[in-house]
Length: 100
Image 1 (tube, one colour):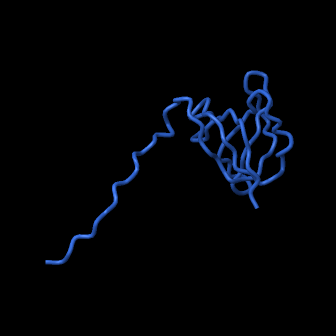
Image 2 (cartoon, helix red, strand yellow):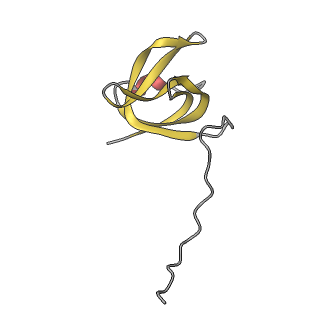
Image 3 (cartoon, one colour):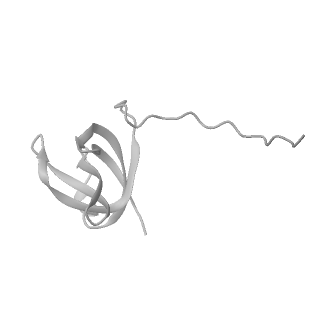
């Protein structure tokens, strides 16, 4: 009989749909200023390619998001609304990593 391959146990699945105040990574993509406002705040869009928004973002207190506008970044933050627009989450971003 053929030997059965040993399959390592898969890590537990973490649900990104649940709004459980856990930080997640979004991107990489180019950050732009979006048109809308969220509770009076400027909203930014993270686009993986022109016109393809992967997340709408607002900065966390003390995070200077302006430094990253029109740059390619990966953003880390908490989901505020999982379906802010059709299938695109709104994220409160607390940090950014530049992407080459």
